[in-house]
Image (cartoon, rainbow, N blue to C red; front, side, top):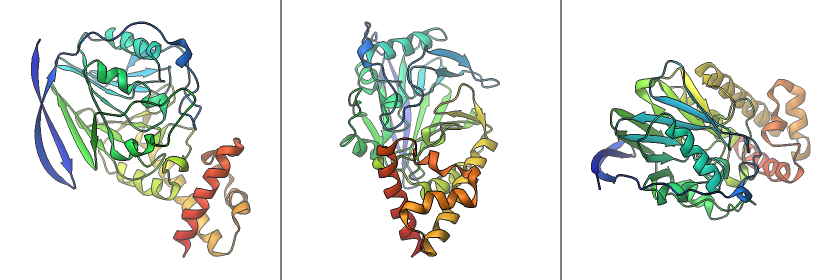
Length: 322
């Protein structure tokens, strides 16, 4: 079986620690179908569920593709030595096979690495199948912790076989992907995948597009999210592959999201300092600036989710207000 050496640099606490990994030619992926595994994506987040998968090139970014449908968006970086994939669609062999079918329309190379951006199963669903096919599946260590209590109705996603604490760099062929954990945001285990030569970043639901929400049950934080996106914006990129949405977005879109979170944080802290109770906080923020749409961030239209998220939001704002 063909064996090729891939140089991977795992960076911890800002210091490069080189490690040489030997990757085998991936075996043929399983075929078959599991229609029963299809469903709404993400457990706490319903976005991106179902729909036919479709791959398309990212304009102006050679070798980079975006796969919509079947859950959250996947990013595909093609090289002559293999594929770097970001996110694996809704749990189920049918969705896995559909994703692999799309990838095979642009390359016959195997998936060497799959990076999981966060715990929700519309992004992490097929971890086990990619591991079984020979891929290294990379995620932040907090995602592994989130999995301990995450039990969506579609089934629990598998555990990644590679975790990192701060940074992780993947090199396959002529491509490099820098994986960053910059703090809590959508969840506590968010990963951003940066392709420096293409000035492109794949964000998962840490920047899902226009429909952002904060999952406090899995360690999300609106206050931290503002700081996390501020760190993201220091990277040199012009194109964003969001966790959802049909098309790539821009750095200006991320800047707008960061400004929104920062303003929500500022208003909320000021209101709590003035004694605003928890059950009035969202209404008072909306009264100050309705365009911030803070209710959507906390999934106000879903009573069960909203109660948990409001508790988490009020708790972190109260601590910051002291």
